[in-house]
Length: 513
Image 1: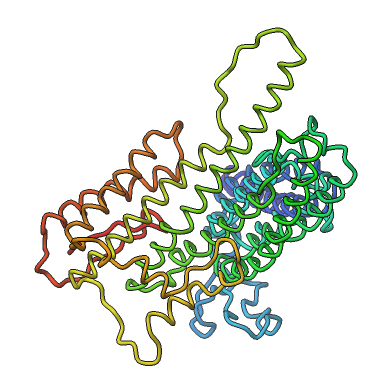
Image 2: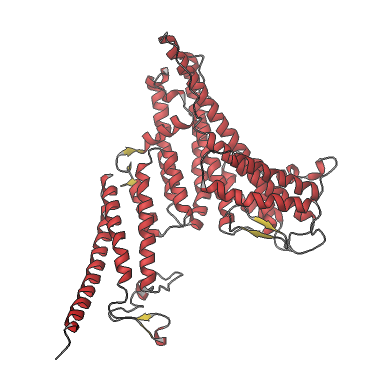
Protein backbone atom coordinates (compact mmCIF):
# COMPACT_ATOMS: atom_id res chain seq x y z
CA UNK A 1 0.00 0.00 0.00
CA UNK A 2 1.48 3.36 -1.07
CA UNK A 3 1.48 6.31 1.29
CA UNK A 4 -1.30 8.80 0.59
CA UNK A 5 1.01 11.74 -0.32
CA UNK A 6 2.79 10.08 -3.31
CA UNK A 7 -0.10 10.44 -5.83
CA UNK A 8 -0.60 14.00 -4.59
CA UNK A 9 3.10 14.76 -5.19
CA UNK A 10 2.93 13.20 -8.67
CA UNK A 11 -0.13 15.28 -9.53
CA UNK A 12 1.54 18.45 -8.21
CA UNK A 13 4.72 17.76 -10.22
CA UNK A 14 2.70 17.05 -13.37
CA UNK A 15 0.69 20.24 -12.82
CA UNK A 16 3.91 22.28 -12.45
CA UNK A 17 5.33 20.75 -15.64
CA UNK A 18 2.14 21.49 -17.61
CA UNK A 19 2.10 25.02 -16.22
CA UNK A 20 5.76 25.52 -17.20
CA UNK A 21 5.02 24.30 -20.73
CA UNK A 22 1.89 26.49 -20.95
CA UNK A 23 3.89 29.60 -19.89
CA UNK A 24 6.48 28.93 -22.57
CA UNK A 25 3.89 28.43 -25.34
CA UNK A 26 2.01 31.56 -24.22
CA UNK A 27 5.28 33.58 -24.11
CA UNK A 28 6.17 32.48 -27.66
CA UNK A 29 2.66 33.35 -28.90
CA UNK A 30 2.72 36.81 -27.29
CA UNK A 31 6.21 37.62 -28.59
CA UNK A 32 5.44 36.52 -32.16
CA UNK A 33 2.07 38.35 -32.14
CA UNK A 34 3.83 41.54 -30.98
CA UNK A 35 6.34 41.23 -33.84
CA UNK A 36 3.48 40.75 -36.35
CA UNK A 37 1.82 43.90 -34.93
CA UNK A 38 4.82 45.97 -36.05
CA UNK A 39 4.08 45.07 -39.69
CA UNK A 40 0.71 46.90 -39.58
CA UNK A 41 0.52 50.41 -41.00
CA UNK A 42 -1.48 52.04 -38.17
CA UNK A 43 0.31 53.81 -35.29
CA UNK A 44 -2.09 52.07 -32.88
CA UNK A 45 -0.33 48.79 -33.77
CA UNK A 46 2.72 49.98 -31.79
CA UNK A 47 0.54 50.44 -28.67
CA UNK A 48 -0.87 46.95 -29.27
CA UNK A 49 2.66 45.52 -29.56
CA UNK A 50 3.66 47.35 -26.37
CA UNK A 51 0.83 45.71 -24.39
CA UNK A 52 1.76 42.27 -25.76
CA UNK A 53 5.45 42.55 -24.80
CA UNK A 54 4.48 43.71 -21.29
CA UNK A 55 2.36 40.55 -20.95
CA UNK A 56 5.25 38.47 -22.31
CA UNK A 57 7.68 40.08 -19.81
CA UNK A 58 5.39 39.02 -16.92
CA UNK A 59 5.83 35.36 -17.96
CA UNK A 60 9.65 35.44 -17.78
CA UNK A 61 9.72 35.14 -13.99
CA UNK A 62 7.61 31.91 -13.87
CA UNK A 63 9.63 30.57 -16.85
CA UNK A 64 12.88 31.18 -14.96
CA UNK A 65 11.56 29.54 -11.78
CA UNK A 66 10.54 26.39 -13.71
CA UNK A 67 13.85 25.79 -15.52
CA UNK A 68 14.55 22.70 -13.36
CA UNK A 69 11.56 20.82 -14.87
CA UNK A 70 11.99 18.75 -18.01
CA UNK A 71 15.00 17.05 -19.56
CA UNK A 72 18.37 18.52 -18.59
CA UNK A 73 21.18 18.96 -21.11
CA UNK A 74 24.22 16.70 -21.21
CA UNK A 75 27.71 17.75 -22.18
CA UNK A 76 29.31 15.64 -24.89
CA UNK A 77 32.87 16.53 -25.93
CA UNK A 78 32.37 14.90 -29.34
CA UNK A 79 29.94 17.71 -30.24
CA UNK A 80 32.28 20.49 -29.11
CA UNK A 81 31.00 22.70 -26.30
CA UNK A 82 27.34 22.46 -27.34
CA UNK A 83 24.94 21.13 -24.69
CA UNK A 84 23.18 17.99 -26.01
CA UNK A 85 19.38 18.12 -25.84
CA UNK A 86 16.80 15.63 -27.10
CA UNK A 87 15.15 17.07 -30.21
CA UNK A 88 17.86 19.71 -30.77
CA UNK A 89 20.73 19.39 -33.22
CA UNK A 90 23.02 22.37 -32.52
CA UNK A 91 24.65 22.32 -35.95
CA UNK A 92 21.45 21.84 -37.99
CA UNK A 93 21.62 25.37 -39.45
CA UNK A 94 25.34 25.27 -40.22
CA UNK A 95 24.82 24.80 -43.98
CA UNK A 96 22.06 27.43 -44.09
CA UNK A 97 24.29 30.24 -42.85
CA UNK A 98 26.02 32.50 -45.39
CA UNK A 99 29.70 31.67 -46.02
CA UNK A 100 30.90 34.76 -44.18
CA UNK A 101 32.46 35.24 -40.76
CA UNK A 102 31.18 34.47 -38.13
CA UNK A 103 29.52 31.14 -38.95
CA UNK A 104 29.66 29.72 -35.44
CA UNK A 105 26.33 29.99 -33.60
CA UNK A 106 25.92 28.41 -30.19
CA UNK A 107 22.66 27.49 -28.46
CA UNK A 108 22.76 29.40 -25.17
CA UNK A 109 21.84 28.00 -21.74
CA UNK A 110 18.29 28.29 -20.47
CA UNK A 111 19.21 30.80 -17.72
CA UNK A 112 20.96 32.98 -20.30
CA UNK A 113 17.91 32.61 -22.58
CA UNK A 114 15.64 34.18 -19.95
CA UNK A 115 18.10 37.07 -19.44
CA UNK A 116 18.36 37.55 -23.23
CA UNK A 117 14.58 37.74 -23.71
CA UNK A 118 14.27 40.10 -20.75
CA UNK A 119 16.76 42.52 -22.37
CA UNK A 120 15.12 42.13 -25.79
CA UNK A 121 11.70 43.04 -24.36
CA UNK A 122 13.19 46.10 -22.59
CA UNK A 123 14.70 47.22 -25.90
CA UNK A 124 11.35 46.76 -27.69
CA UNK A 125 9.58 48.77 -24.95
CA UNK A 126 12.14 51.58 -25.33
CA UNK A 127 11.83 51.47 -29.10
CA UNK A 128 8.03 51.89 -28.91
CA UNK A 129 8.52 55.34 -27.33
CA UNK A 130 9.65 56.73 -30.70
CA UNK A 131 6.01 57.24 -31.76
CA UNK A 132 5.66 59.84 -28.97
CA UNK A 133 8.35 61.97 -30.65
CA UNK A 134 6.70 64.48 -32.95
CA UNK A 135 9.57 66.38 -34.64
CA UNK A 136 12.35 65.32 -37.00
CA UNK A 137 15.22 66.47 -34.74
CA UNK A 138 13.71 64.55 -31.81
CA UNK A 139 13.41 61.40 -33.94
CA UNK A 140 17.02 61.74 -35.10
CA UNK A 141 18.21 62.17 -31.49
CA UNK A 142 16.11 59.14 -30.44
CA UNK A 143 17.73 56.97 -33.13
CA UNK A 144 21.22 58.17 -32.09
CA UNK A 145 20.60 57.45 -28.39
CA UNK A 146 19.05 54.04 -29.13
CA UNK A 147 21.97 53.11 -31.36
CA UNK A 148 24.48 54.06 -28.64
CA UNK A 149 23.27 51.09 -26.56
CA UNK A 150 24.43 48.73 -29.37
CA UNK A 151 21.03 47.01 -29.63
CA UNK A 152 20.47 43.72 -31.46
CA UNK A 153 19.58 43.65 -35.16
CA UNK A 154 15.95 42.67 -34.41
CA UNK A 155 15.20 45.74 -32.25
CA UNK A 156 17.08 48.00 -34.73
CA UNK A 157 14.98 46.60 -37.59
CA UNK A 158 11.71 47.03 -35.67
CA UNK A 159 12.60 50.67 -35.01
CA UNK A 160 13.22 51.24 -38.73
CA UNK A 161 9.92 49.64 -39.80
CA UNK A 162 8.05 51.70 -37.17
CA UNK A 163 9.67 54.95 -38.35
CA UNK A 164 9.02 54.72 -42.08
CA UNK A 165 6.17 52.43 -43.13
CA UNK A 166 6.39 51.30 -46.79
CA UNK A 167 9.07 54.00 -47.32
CA UNK A 168 6.27 56.58 -47.62
CA UNK A 169 5.00 58.06 -44.37
CA UNK A 170 6.62 58.61 -40.95
CA UNK A 171 4.78 56.36 -38.44
CA UNK A 172 2.32 55.71 -41.26
CA UNK A 173 0.62 59.11 -40.80
CA UNK A 174 3.03 62.04 -41.42
CA UNK A 175 4.56 63.00 -44.76
CA UNK A 176 8.34 63.41 -44.56
CA UNK A 177 8.03 66.80 -46.30
CA UNK A 178 5.80 68.09 -43.47
CA UNK A 179 8.29 66.81 -40.87
CA UNK A 180 11.10 68.69 -42.66
CA UNK A 181 9.05 71.92 -42.71
CA UNK A 182 8.28 71.61 -38.98
CA UNK A 183 11.98 70.98 -38.26
CA UNK A 184 12.92 74.12 -40.22
CA UNK A 185 10.33 76.20 -38.31
CA UNK A 186 11.59 74.92 -34.97
CA UNK A 187 15.28 75.45 -35.77
CA UNK A 188 15.67 78.62 -37.82
CA UNK A 189 12.12 80.05 -38.31
CA UNK A 190 12.50 80.94 -42.03
CA UNK A 191 10.09 83.72 -43.12
CA UNK A 192 8.86 81.62 -46.05
CA UNK A 193 7.28 79.16 -43.57
CA UNK A 194 5.76 81.88 -41.34
CA UNK A 195 1.99 82.29 -41.67
CA UNK A 196 2.37 86.06 -41.14
CA UNK A 197 4.85 86.50 -44.00
CA UNK A 198 3.82 87.55 -47.50
CA UNK A 199 5.93 84.72 -48.99
CA UNK A 200 3.75 82.08 -47.31
CA UNK A 201 1.02 82.43 -49.96
CA UNK A 202 3.31 83.45 -52.82
CA UNK A 203 3.16 80.80 -55.57
CA UNK A 204 6.76 81.25 -56.70
CA UNK A 205 8.08 81.06 -53.11
CA UNK A 206 5.91 78.00 -52.49
CA UNK A 207 7.42 76.26 -55.52
CA UNK A 208 10.96 77.04 -54.29
CA UNK A 209 10.40 75.75 -50.74
CA UNK A 210 8.35 72.70 -51.79
CA UNK A 211 11.04 71.66 -54.27
CA UNK A 212 13.77 72.07 -51.63
CA UNK A 213 11.80 70.15 -48.96
CA UNK A 214 11.11 67.30 -51.41
CA UNK A 215 14.84 67.05 -52.17
CA UNK A 216 15.56 66.97 -48.40
CA UNK A 217 13.25 64.01 -47.74
CA UNK A 218 15.42 61.23 -49.14
CA UNK A 219 18.77 62.27 -47.55
CA UNK A 220 17.11 62.67 -44.13
CA UNK A 221 15.38 59.29 -44.41
CA UNK A 222 18.75 57.78 -45.35
CA UNK A 223 20.43 59.53 -42.40
CA UNK A 224 17.90 58.07 -39.94
CA UNK A 225 18.13 54.63 -41.57
CA UNK A 226 21.93 54.70 -41.18
CA UNK A 227 21.36 54.47 -37.41
CA UNK A 228 19.76 51.08 -37.97
CA UNK A 229 23.17 49.59 -38.81
CA UNK A 230 25.79 48.45 -36.33
CA UNK A 231 28.22 51.11 -35.09
CA UNK A 232 31.08 50.24 -37.47
CA UNK A 233 28.83 50.21 -40.55
CA UNK A 234 27.21 53.46 -39.41
CA UNK A 235 30.56 55.26 -39.47
CA UNK A 236 31.28 54.02 -42.96
CA UNK A 237 27.87 55.18 -44.26
CA UNK A 238 28.07 58.58 -42.48
CA UNK A 239 31.19 59.30 -44.52
CA UNK A 240 29.28 58.63 -47.74
CA UNK A 241 26.08 60.53 -46.91
CA UNK A 242 28.10 63.76 -46.60
CA UNK A 243 28.10 63.88 -50.41
CA UNK A 244 24.27 64.02 -50.46
CA UNK A 245 24.24 66.76 -47.82
CA UNK A 246 26.87 68.75 -49.74
CA UNK A 247 24.48 68.79 -52.73
CA UNK A 248 21.64 69.90 -50.42
CA UNK A 249 23.86 72.67 -49.01
CA UNK A 250 24.42 74.06 -52.49
CA UNK A 251 20.69 73.96 -53.28
CA UNK A 252 19.80 75.57 -49.92
CA UNK A 253 22.05 78.54 -50.64
CA UNK A 254 20.47 79.04 -54.10
CA UNK A 255 16.91 78.82 -52.70
CA UNK A 256 17.82 81.25 -49.89
CA UNK A 257 19.13 83.78 -52.44
CA UNK A 258 15.99 83.45 -54.61
CA UNK A 259 13.64 83.82 -51.62
CA UNK A 260 15.63 86.78 -50.27
CA UNK A 261 15.33 88.69 -53.57
CA UNK A 262 11.55 87.99 -53.60
CA UNK A 263 11.18 89.13 -49.98
CA UNK A 264 13.12 92.36 -50.57
CA UNK A 265 10.51 93.40 -53.15
CA UNK A 266 7.52 92.57 -50.90
CA UNK A 267 8.75 93.18 -47.31
CA UNK A 268 12.05 95.15 -47.31
CA UNK A 269 12.32 95.08 -43.47
CA UNK A 270 12.68 91.27 -43.50
CA UNK A 271 15.59 89.08 -44.64
CA UNK A 272 15.84 85.52 -45.89
CA UNK A 273 19.62 85.14 -45.80
CA UNK A 274 21.18 81.74 -44.99
CA UNK A 275 18.04 80.33 -43.33
CA UNK A 276 17.82 77.01 -45.18
CA UNK A 277 21.61 76.95 -45.57
CA UNK A 278 22.11 77.27 -41.80
CA UNK A 279 19.86 74.29 -41.17
CA UNK A 280 21.64 72.03 -43.68
CA UNK A 281 25.05 73.24 -42.42
CA UNK A 282 24.01 72.28 -38.88
CA UNK A 283 23.26 68.70 -39.98
CA UNK A 284 26.47 68.57 -42.03
CA UNK A 285 28.48 69.52 -38.95
CA UNK A 286 26.63 67.02 -36.76
CA UNK A 287 27.46 64.20 -39.19
CA UNK A 288 31.13 65.26 -39.33
CA UNK A 289 31.39 65.43 -35.53
CA UNK A 290 29.69 62.05 -35.16
CA UNK A 291 32.01 60.53 -37.78
CA UNK A 292 35.16 61.64 -35.92
CA UNK A 293 33.94 60.84 -32.40
CA UNK A 294 32.79 57.34 -33.38
CA UNK A 295 36.43 56.56 -34.22
CA UNK A 296 37.23 56.71 -30.48
CA UNK A 297 34.33 54.41 -29.64
CA UNK A 298 35.47 51.89 -32.28
CA UNK A 299 39.14 52.21 -31.16
CA UNK A 300 40.31 53.14 -34.65
CA UNK A 301 42.84 55.80 -33.65
CA UNK A 302 46.37 55.27 -32.38
CA UNK A 303 47.60 57.38 -29.47
CA UNK A 304 49.80 59.56 -31.72
CA UNK A 305 46.70 60.46 -33.82
CA UNK A 306 44.63 61.79 -30.91
CA UNK A 307 46.05 65.30 -31.07
CA UNK A 308 44.96 66.14 -34.62
CA UNK A 309 41.51 64.50 -34.17
CA UNK A 310 40.83 66.55 -31.02
CA UNK A 311 42.28 69.67 -32.71
CA UNK A 312 39.93 69.30 -35.70
CA UNK A 313 36.97 68.90 -33.36
CA UNK A 314 37.76 71.75 -30.95
CA UNK A 315 39.26 74.40 -33.23
CA UNK A 316 37.18 73.73 -36.29
CA UNK A 317 33.98 71.64 -36.14
CA UNK A 318 32.67 72.70 -32.73
CA UNK A 319 33.58 76.34 -33.47
CA UNK A 320 31.51 76.14 -36.67
CA UNK A 321 28.70 74.28 -34.90
CA UNK A 322 28.36 76.91 -32.15
CA UNK A 323 28.44 79.69 -34.72
CA UNK A 324 25.70 77.94 -36.73
CA UNK A 325 23.53 77.39 -33.64
CA UNK A 326 23.96 81.03 -32.57
CA UNK A 327 22.99 82.20 -36.07
CA UNK A 328 19.86 79.99 -35.97
CA UNK A 329 18.98 81.36 -32.53
CA UNK A 330 19.39 84.95 -33.77
CA UNK A 331 17.21 84.18 -36.79
CA UNK A 332 14.50 82.81 -34.48
CA UNK A 333 14.65 85.91 -32.26
CA UNK A 334 14.47 88.29 -35.26
CA UNK A 335 11.38 86.50 -36.57
CA UNK A 336 9.77 86.56 -33.10
CA UNK A 337 10.37 90.33 -32.83
CA UNK A 338 8.69 90.96 -36.19
CA UNK A 339 5.66 88.88 -35.15
CA UNK A 340 5.44 90.73 -31.81
CA UNK A 341 5.50 94.10 -33.59
CA UNK A 342 2.73 92.95 -35.93
CA UNK A 343 0.61 91.86 -32.94
CA UNK A 344 1.28 95.18 -31.13
CA UNK A 345 0.05 97.10 -34.16
CA UNK A 346 -3.25 95.24 -34.08
CA UNK A 347 -3.87 95.22 -30.34
CA UNK A 348 -3.84 98.28 -28.06
CA UNK A 349 -3.56 96.18 -24.86
CA UNK A 350 -0.17 95.93 -23.17
CA UNK A 351 1.02 92.38 -22.68
CA UNK A 352 3.53 91.29 -20.08
CA UNK A 353 6.68 89.81 -21.56
CA UNK A 354 7.54 86.37 -20.25
CA UNK A 355 11.15 85.28 -20.33
CA UNK A 356 11.15 82.59 -22.98
CA UNK A 357 13.48 79.60 -22.78
CA UNK A 358 15.54 79.52 -25.96
CA UNK A 359 15.03 76.11 -27.68
CA UNK A 360 18.68 75.85 -28.82
CA UNK A 361 20.23 76.91 -25.49
CA UNK A 362 20.90 73.36 -24.25
CA UNK A 363 22.59 72.31 -27.48
CA UNK A 364 24.76 75.46 -27.55
CA UNK A 365 25.81 74.82 -23.94
CA UNK A 366 26.61 71.15 -24.59
CA UNK A 367 28.64 72.12 -27.68
CA UNK A 368 30.69 74.55 -25.54
CA UNK A 369 31.37 71.77 -23.04
CA UNK A 370 32.38 69.33 -25.80
CA UNK A 371 34.63 71.95 -27.38
CA UNK A 372 36.43 72.56 -24.07
CA UNK A 373 36.87 68.82 -23.48
CA UNK A 374 38.35 68.41 -26.99
CA UNK A 375 40.63 71.46 -26.54
CA UNK A 376 41.80 70.08 -23.18
CA UNK A 377 42.62 66.70 -24.73
CA UNK A 378 44.42 68.33 -27.69
CA UNK A 379 46.70 70.39 -25.41
CA UNK A 380 47.27 67.36 -23.17
CA UNK A 381 48.44 65.27 -26.15
CA UNK A 382 50.78 68.03 -27.44
CA UNK A 383 52.30 68.46 -23.93
CA UNK A 384 52.76 64.69 -23.50
CA UNK A 385 54.47 64.58 -26.90
CA UNK A 386 56.84 67.37 -25.79
CA UNK A 387 57.74 65.30 -22.74
CA UNK A 388 58.41 62.24 -24.92
CA UNK A 389 55.45 60.30 -23.54
CA UNK A 390 53.69 59.53 -26.83
CA UNK A 391 54.89 56.50 -28.78
CA UNK A 392 55.16 57.29 -32.49
CA UNK A 393 55.49 54.70 -35.27
CA UNK A 394 58.50 54.51 -37.53
CA UNK A 395 56.98 55.81 -40.76
CA UNK A 396 58.37 53.84 -43.71
CA UNK A 397 55.67 53.38 -46.33
CA UNK A 398 53.51 56.29 -45.15
CA UNK A 399 53.74 59.47 -43.10
CA UNK A 400 51.67 61.52 -40.66
CA UNK A 401 50.31 63.49 -43.62
CA UNK A 402 49.06 60.30 -45.31
CA UNK A 403 47.30 59.20 -42.10
CA UNK A 404 45.83 62.66 -41.51
CA UNK A 405 44.44 62.83 -45.04
CA UNK A 406 43.02 59.31 -44.73
CA UNK A 407 41.21 60.19 -41.47
CA UNK A 408 39.55 63.29 -42.94
CA UNK A 409 39.07 62.04 -46.53
CA UNK A 410 35.21 61.95 -46.37
CA UNK A 411 35.19 65.71 -45.61
CA UNK A 412 36.67 66.54 -49.03
CA UNK A 413 33.20 66.32 -50.62
CA UNK A 414 31.93 69.10 -48.30
CA UNK A 415 32.27 72.71 -49.45
CA UNK A 416 30.98 74.35 -46.22
CA UNK A 417 32.81 74.09 -43.90
CA UNK A 418 35.88 73.83 -46.16
CA UNK A 419 38.18 70.92 -45.22
CA UNK A 420 41.41 71.74 -43.40
CA UNK A 421 44.30 70.16 -45.31
CA UNK A 422 47.41 68.87 -43.57
CA UNK A 423 49.63 71.86 -44.47
CA UNK A 424 46.97 74.28 -43.15
CA UNK A 425 46.64 72.21 -39.98
CA UNK A 426 50.42 72.32 -39.37
CA UNK A 427 50.46 76.10 -39.90
CA UNK A 428 47.43 76.70 -37.65
CA UNK A 429 48.67 74.44 -34.85
CA UNK A 430 52.33 75.60 -34.98
CA UNK A 431 53.34 76.71 -31.47
CA UNK A 432 56.35 78.67 -32.77
CA UNK A 433 54.05 81.50 -33.85
CA UNK A 434 53.66 82.41 -30.16
CA UNK A 435 56.34 84.51 -28.50
CA UNK A 436 57.66 82.85 -26.38
CA UNK A 437 56.48 79.40 -27.52
CA UNK A 438 54.62 77.59 -24.68
CA UNK A 439 56.33 74.70 -22.90
CA UNK A 440 54.72 71.45 -21.76
CA UNK A 441 53.94 72.92 -18.29
CA UNK A 442 52.05 75.84 -19.93
CA UNK A 443 50.05 73.42 -22.07
CA UNK A 444 49.15 71.18 -19.10
CA UNK A 445 47.93 74.28 -17.26
CA UNK A 446 45.92 75.42 -20.31
CA UNK A 447 44.42 71.91 -20.61
CA UNK A 448 43.38 71.95 -16.93
CA UNK A 449 41.63 75.32 -17.55
CA UNK A 450 39.69 73.82 -20.46
CA UNK A 451 38.58 70.86 -18.32
CA UNK A 452 37.69 73.30 -15.53
CA UNK A 453 35.63 75.39 -17.96
CA UNK A 454 33.79 72.28 -19.21
CA UNK A 455 33.05 71.34 -15.59
CA UNK A 456 31.65 74.82 -14.79
CA UNK A 457 29.45 74.82 -17.91
CA UNK A 458 28.01 71.38 -17.15
CA UNK A 459 27.46 72.00 -13.43
CA UNK A 460 25.35 75.06 -14.26
CA UNK A 461 23.04 73.09 -16.53
CA UNK A 462 19.53 72.60 -15.09
CA UNK A 463 18.26 69.08 -14.47
CA UNK A 464 20.19 65.80 -14.20
CA UNK A 465 21.46 64.33 -17.45
CA UNK A 466 23.36 61.00 -17.80
CA UNK A 467 25.68 62.43 -20.51
CA UNK A 468 26.54 65.45 -18.33
CA UNK A 469 27.41 63.13 -15.42
CA UNK A 470 29.61 60.97 -17.66
CA UNK A 471 31.60 63.99 -18.91
CA UNK A 472 31.99 65.34 -15.36
CA UNK A 473 33.44 61.98 -14.23
CA UNK A 474 36.20 62.50 -16.82
CA UNK A 475 36.72 66.26 -16.46
CA UNK A 476 37.21 66.25 -12.66
CA UNK A 477 40.12 63.73 -12.45
CA UNK A 478 41.72 65.24 -15.58
CA UNK A 479 41.82 68.70 -13.89
CA UNK A 480 43.81 67.19 -11.01
CA UNK A 481 46.15 65.18 -13.29
CA UNK A 482 46.89 68.22 -15.50
CA UNK A 483 47.75 70.38 -12.48
CA UNK A 484 50.09 67.68 -11.16
CA UNK A 485 51.81 67.37 -14.55
CA UNK A 486 52.12 71.17 -14.81
CA UNK A 487 53.96 71.08 -11.47
CA UNK A 488 56.50 68.57 -12.86
CA UNK A 489 54.96 65.40 -11.38
CA UNK A 490 56.76 62.28 -12.75
CA UNK A 491 58.36 64.33 -15.53
CA UNK A 492 61.50 62.20 -15.54
CA UNK A 493 59.70 58.88 -15.91
CA UNK A 494 59.47 57.60 -19.46
CA UNK A 495 56.44 55.36 -18.77
CA UNK A 496 53.68 56.01 -21.26
CA UNK A 497 50.36 57.39 -19.95
CA UNK A 498 47.19 55.33 -19.96
CA UNK A 499 43.93 56.54 -21.53
CA UNK A 500 40.91 55.10 -19.76
CA UNK A 501 37.78 55.33 -21.94
CA UNK A 502 35.58 53.35 -19.50
CA UNK A 503 33.99 56.55 -18.08
CA UNK A 504 33.20 58.11 -21.46
CA UNK A 505 33.58 56.65 -24.94
CA UNK A 506 34.97 59.87 -26.49
CA UNK A 507 37.03 61.44 -23.68
CA UNK A 508 39.49 59.37 -21.63
CA UNK A 509 40.72 59.83 -18.09
CA UNK A 510 44.48 60.40 -18.40
CA UNK A 511 46.46 58.21 -15.99
CA UNK A 512 50.18 58.72 -15.35
CA UNK A 513 51.86 55.56 -14.11
